[in-house]
Image 1 (spheres, rainbow, N blue to C red):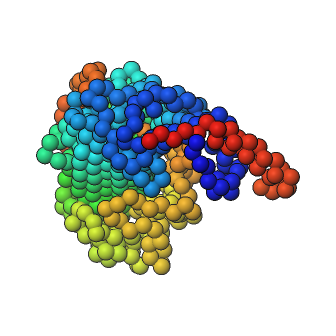
Image 2 (spheres, one colour):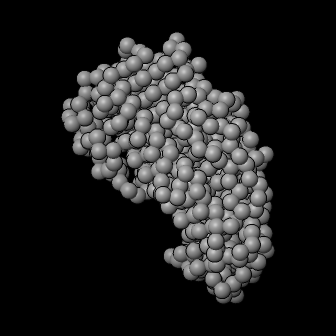
Image 3 (tube, helix red, strand yellow):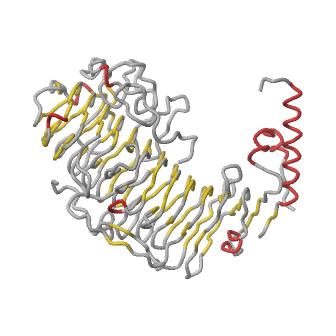
Length: 525
């Protein structure tokens, strides 16, 4: 029998809900049959993998598990140890998660195979704190035609060195063929999806028809295609939200979004082409777009470019520093465009107001440059043109650090602080987010309220896309790589206080639940 430590007794109210009576904790080692252990899991069970290498068989390895909201199933690393899940070739995906719900994969290192983790028909599935790398194709995918992906949570994963089409995350399907919605992609570190064996290599790609997703607090750099790419929602639901991310060395545009998107509080240090680009892709043309409080350094092209506009586009309170291109360039139905409260360096095209080009990258920002990479400190300097110079009507609730803006119209991704940046220093690592931050929010932000779309980081968990010249895409339903991609996107082509008795009763109930769990605990290996 596995020994349960007395430390658990200190958290009895948590044990009451997290460790229900009858649920099992099963611990295995690399010498055990992981497929057999997975197949036997029931709602509320935890499978704990000891450190070491788990070599999967050459055949398909699929997880099909259904937990409940109250009794989720968890497959996780043993505390302080690293289980490495791999396979001998790329003829199959390393891990397939099919027809599953209320399932969590946590702390696993996944390497090799075709896709690292491929999901089909997955709802309320969480992939968190995993390290996925050296895959033959995509790292994490949710892109099977005709499937539904609701409430996915992709949190704090480290992804790098992909191959094939090479996306860090490929979420949703071409031409509205499947949808991911009400999902959260947060706190991931994605980089080097631009290797010699990569044909595309988006960081996070969210396909057409996916909606009401939040992409937040991710660090993305050295990609082959855009660092973040979204299509339109085609009327399926609310806009996707891209907020508080930092990007650099993006192999195409940094953020490319066709329509139905809120882009706020992001930092872009450099991209091969535009910082933010809106253009027609598949059935969506630029409309229902808000671009608010971003800080963009554009060493090569435009900071913001929206072309072929057919519906509302709001560009407000952005700090834009374009070394050679336009700070803002727009075309299409200009009656649908509002440009206001932006400042920095560069020219404008398509509009005549809404941008103060009297800035200077050397004096407006603490220690910034057009290097296109880190180190780069884009926090407003004392005396900066950006301080309290934006449009108050369009101030968003928080800033890049999650600090409450308090209605102050500082231009760009940061709220100014005379004592300097109170948050994380931009660097090649996971972003550190203060727990005291405002936490962001979904929905429209132009009113300054932050809205309510998507999900919070504590809720149940978006998706991705390709670009403008090719939308034909092919779908493979074989048991191998199973990728659906655009066949080359051409992204840059235009187009407890109720008293001691209550606490004692809760503790007693929790102890009973824990005892039931102890009786079913098993240790293998």
